[in-house]
Length: 89
Image 1 (cartoon, helix red, strand yellow):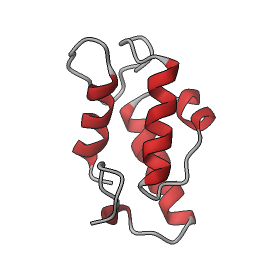
Image 2: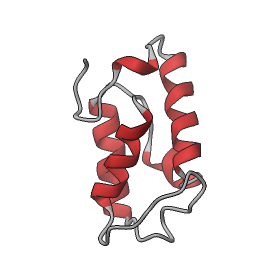
Image 3: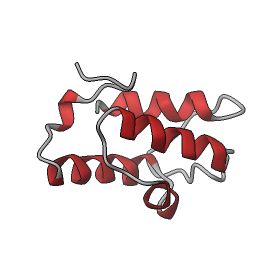
Image 4: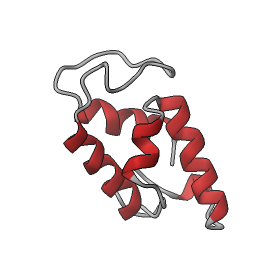
């Protein structure tokens, strides 16, 4: 997953447009649990084996990028092959 893709996915899920820093708590910025579930679902659909509980545990872009990289490495996938649209490139 490209770094900007994850940031765009989160930005699209927020109620109000805000600038998101790597270590901002996404829940404090307004990311709701339903949106978080949708993000987890979209990541899984894109081939990233992550769970809602893993995302909510550390709700920052930096943590999520690390989580995505680890999940893809464990599954033997190249982190660069997953697109934010939910498909492979």
